[in-house]
Image 1 (cartoon, helix red, strand yellow):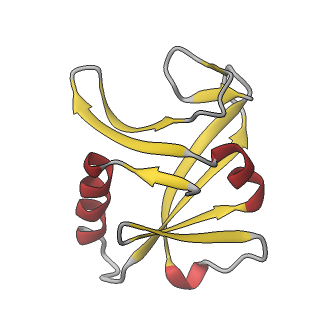
Image 2: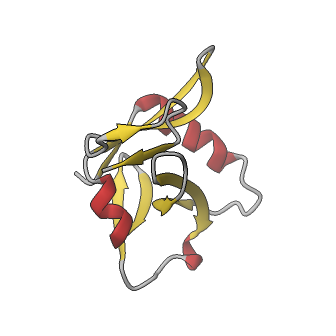
Length: 112
């Protein structure tokens, strides 16, 4: 499995999709980019399915959620769990990445 999505993250993704102005099912694009205090930063975004289709994209259906990850990011994200928290410790999506050797204190960046 390339990436897993927790039940709380899945529920939040479905809520966001329902509120979408396009009315179309959107693809969840997950990636990694350089930056942050640990060297690499997570990216997460929604895009219309028509925008998908880059040559090196990897597509997955994770419990009814269409996920796309570019090949470079896929190498960093294999086995990662996408979690969503709405508690006092912070609201938003969080990545639990078994490949990360070091993370910053805010959890937004990591290194391998």
